[in-house]
Image (cartoon, rainbow, N blue to C red; front, side):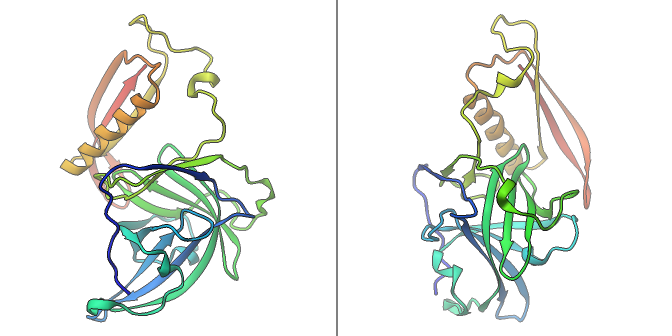
Length: 260
């Protein structure tokens, strides 16, 4: 089987229903043994219940289906994989090694957060687990902390439609998934509403990124998309600073705060 990626010449927006227990999206974890004897894991995510569309794909050093704690696991974004990889096992063409299916799951919930995604996945033969994925300049995965690792999906809210963009961004993600519950405006829950008088900032949104060329381009994209999504906002002030973010490693980030 070829490992070719899918090339997107234009940005195409499609709307599809969010995954539910009755109409879950497929996911699979593959062990990929390279010709040199090294191995890694490929985590493939379906974006439709039938599993017929290209798969969002990550490479990782730990199996996403058997995480035991809430420590972060780094993910490497990969080109979209063909949907046949949901069931394929065996040698790859062009001496790319061999893949073996280790874990099969069903995505019952998939929604966007400020930093990325929250997901509920039921792994075959195991419990339903809550997972958190960051999709900004740092892409990584963990078990969602302070939440039970096994629960019923009866209380999982249906989060609405998922607009999916097929464009490849600077962060390497080939598809951006956004989940939203209702069509109310973001500011409807605010005690004060935005004004366009040029005075009186009432809310702030903070963005940050690493100090690399690609990360800064992605930061621009995040700010521009946020403003495009809220044309009723008027920017009153913007502040930037350089600070150290602490994770597995400490590294400088640019922090940008946009006041509206």
